[in-house]
Length: 308
Image (cartoon, rainbow, N blue to C red):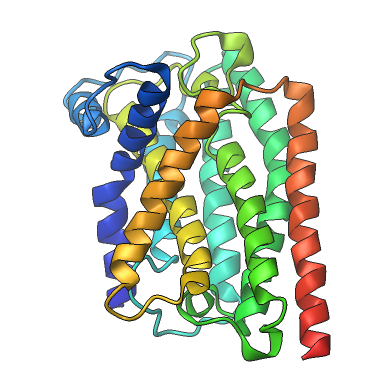
């Protein structure tokens, strides 16, 4: 329970900070001062204090979607232990629940975009559905690699446990390959460059932003907050996957965790500074490549178990 509460508190507190680190990194690459590090917090506070405007073509789905998206994303973040160790063994159930919660948030995001009757939002929804169908199998394979390298069926326990002794020879290689694939999926799942440009204003090239064009006020704030928490969730996953490679002691676990999360945010900002957005027809190739990298890690982990 302590791990769940700490994950909940850290997600709510630090998730918007990742956007600030990414934007400051991009500003540094561009030679600009950039927005304040806490700009995302100011924007959320401003949006929560604004009134929401709803189109006459929308139904209750559009109004309920931000709440469902925020709640399911936050619940998914609670399943990934940020600090400390998970004490409860749910077996494979926590992994399945994590994927279903993320899928539920995506389903309502697509549904709310279609509910507006807008051609642009429908276009963004169709792209989101297509790319997610390619990203989700690769994500499942990445998490399956984590379970294998840690010798447990529970995702929470796997992220809290050291590498399995029976896979000691190949576990580091599998971990690196899994982290590489998961970083690509992080960029895709969170609509970052090179898959999508979160700062674009061209409707024909947008994915995530196209789906929330009609949202305003507190509804838009919940969507933006949910997107920040989803980015935090993937960053926490990557950090906890990489932590066993550094063998931190009990005292150094917290500093190493926050350093890894900050480095990942800086890495996202660096990628967005040196790369351009891919053509949409190239995005499936990128996601397929992430799946191949994860599959290589899976085969290597199986080989390590057989040898061990």
